[in-house]
Image 1 (cartoon, one colour):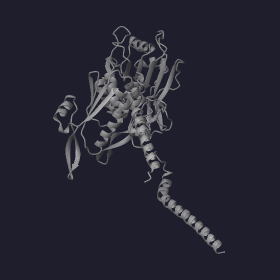
Image 2 (tube, one colour):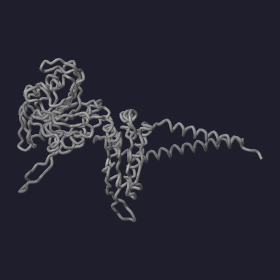
Image 3 (cartoon, helix red, strand yellow):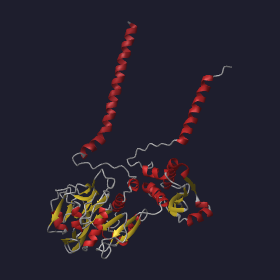
Image 4 (cartoon, one colour):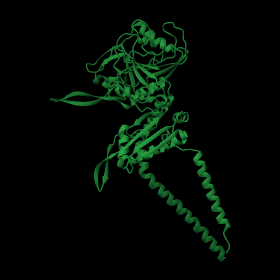
Length: 515
């Protein structure tokens, strides 16, 4: 019996190739991620962090098995993400999945780690029932522990894990200061969501100025000055100036006009901080921005004998969607809602040692009110808005010349100026996600923490079609209706022509054979 050595050799070669591929796969790792934000692969910041860990990280996922959709996708996404960390971190990353559902010891362990069971809806025997499920993650490093109690937002999962590892591996978190003493709103009360989010990666503190000397109570890594209403004494301005000149990082969210929506009155607000900003070319004009692209307010209108509540667009609450695509701080934001915003004076002279980077613009359908302000909704709606866009926020970097003549000792200063001090104030605006995201990005940018800034910008969002002009919509509709029919007809004609040509050739061959 003759053996088929050719087939056996082919099988051996194929098997050898598979073994080699698997061996290579154990040592090398790669991923093709076609999403815009690369949400399914680790960012360079995460990779750099885990590759330079001094001690191993242990991640323990308390996750119930056999969960219904969409929760089963959360488990799969988390497992893939941890596998990525393991692939890049090697022996420095150890992870495991456990199911506490039927194990009392694991339930007690999850309880000690403050990972609670959450109730989810499941369909069993055609009935909707509530079921307890665990979906938490414990992260341990050098004897310290961080916990993600519930994995529910996949778009922030990498940020949550990396920032937790980062906090555990740092001896001391950078300090973010909130300047007080000039009528600023209390940060922890008025900006609670932002304050709590900042405290995840930094140490937020209230900063004051010495009563008689131009010195802060503590030199923070970044200083926020938000919505001051009282005058700044000269030595307070000198403290800010000295901090910037020495390479400090300052974010100024300032109201140039004190506007009151309830009584419809507004007046220019001067605190003394304006002259200091002008020294750096960061002049905020004493005006109010009106934008057709705006948020709505509720007004009472009388119809007959009744007062009816009606929502109308109010141009003094502009919604900004025009961001600098080159700036990591804002290029992934969707929209920011402002409250009586003023504009950055782009004609102001910026010192040669400073670079100004525009960040946020109003829409093209905007204009300004200056001098005399009319805030009544009826009057505001009647205004012609077609003079924009205007600059609302800008970033300044470089060597800042001292307003008080102090010698400059650094060329690494950073200044962020936005012409609205209230857009982060939750007592006025509420907790608007886009506004809070901008606040967090501002802090990362000031501290030069580009790692967190790059990770937070990742988003898992459905792709949406752009706005279609009214004149184009009928064409799109007709193409969608008639296009498929036309393609089928053309394909049928093409096939008919092919068969006709073949028939002619076949008949010609038969005639040649009979001749």
